[in-house]
Length: 448
Length: 160
Image 1 (cartoon, chains in turn red, cyan):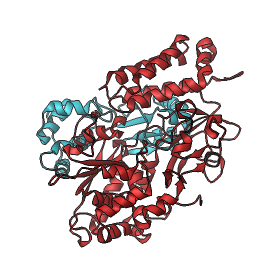
Image 2 (cartoon, rainbow over the protein chains, first blue to last red):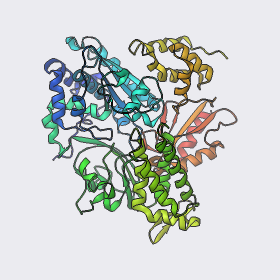
Image 3 (cartoon, rainbow over the protein chains, first blue to last red):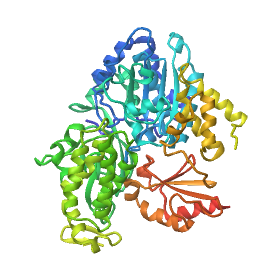
Image 4 (cartoon, chains in turn red, purple):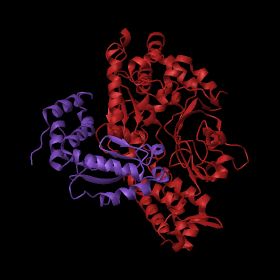
């Protein structure tokens, strides 16, 4: 398998690629021509199904299947909504893709909207990215002027308007039903399911919500076919994945990798992250955005059975929660030995407490309790029973809320205690040492 | 205090309302609140009432939204609002040190404004720029790969 296959980012370094003219010269919008002139919507859905592509926002649900659930009652409009509310800590791939390749997303939106029979589609972008919204709006104007958007696209009789919608700074709106509420001009409170958006979504009409990266893959699937796409990757992890990497690595940034790339190669080769910064070593990894379980370095490189781990949905989750994690959104955070796990866990808890919409009490109250307890452990006021209290609160949130934010808040805490319990105990037993600036427990040795 | 959009902003607001299906003008609420903040710097309750009027919705429908989304400033702010990321990845990239330097430099804490009215500091959660961190945002502009030196340069530039 060639490691250099690029489905999304092949032309990302071409000067002027953000303009219609240059994007078109690289073969851009060929998928729109092919889809609208030569394919039926059903055929496109079939190709996306064959590709095996799974939702790139974090949940990994098969995209073709999601599309096939869309209800099609007569006389009722259908909507495609692109989820560009990227807010999961560690994740900045959609930001990168949209600001550099706006036309790729727009091309994907056109073919996907055509496949789903939508005549008005939305791109919901987190409000902080107002500069990216302007880039997208400019690209939409260009595509419209060239006849790829608006009325009667390429003379086919198919009409499509694309609307870019800003959010207002709320992580919860990355949850698809909260996003729809927000798009309707309301607070981002997730809806009870069922009904699912495929039946009652935006304005109570059938709606598909897909992540930016998922939609950006569709032009390639149309140009080359779903079967070709499925040849890339490994097993049920087909295609490539954008990984946004941050932390104590030599080369932070966004990488398009073929799924199935060995973790060791991704982490240490110069083509990718280049390893941990000089003079330090890897302590822990959050592989798929802040909500996925944190893994110590040994369990990150190898599964509990001693197999080399791969960057794929299946391999990263090998071992389940006790010894595995998740690919999630591809928000990859590497931490070296100078990182205090207690402090980082408290930081993540504060995030989820801040971002809880407040609708369900286990999440609203539980995230606040976890933040408070972690704050007191980190600041030298913890007691031993606090550790079990945290585990207990996390358990009581998990699975007991309308949306997955509760789970997302519970998992980082539960996994940090599972793998780094001695670090929590050290904070409680040695508050004076633990509260020194930069103090980190490293087993027998203490870094301060 | 009565609040009105400039002619340009009003025209823009009307264009935004037309993006949505008939009867769904409430969808324009977030974009129009952003528009209002762009003009007035913050979103007062008078502004909220005005926006409610533009969209033919009740004022409470605007209040509940304006107070839910953290990007809207519900109190007057300084000329430059610096919103720095306090979330894990930016901290791992060195954010805690850089932002502590920023606070010392300005002599204020988060959610405070300098006495000359030039800078307001706000702590925000993840800005989706983790690998380019530490980062902050001043209105629409992102400032990334921040160091103490870069912070000094930005503050000096904006103080001119």
